Image (cartoon, rainbow, N blue to C red; front, side):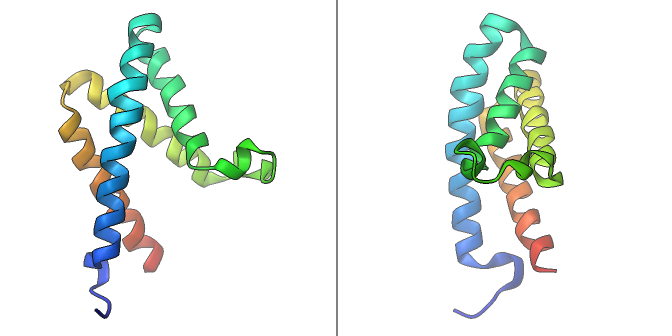
Length: 113
């Protein structure tokens, strides 16, 4: 299959699977546990930082320390925070998965532009 722009099957599959798996782990499990202990805002902050670190495994092993100061790291942190707040408000993991999927697709699209 040649390129379909934003609708490339590999983009759809990777964006959807990432959204489902990451939201189950970060909002469905981690955020819920942390919110019980620390409240919504602190839990959202903890979850957001861990979410961003998850997207930078090389940072965790000290191979890319400058990644902490990059814009991408902070964008992912803010998005993780917003995903957590939206989940706390709506209590609907499916909705957050959909938002995350759309975000991933937009990131693919703008990276290609």
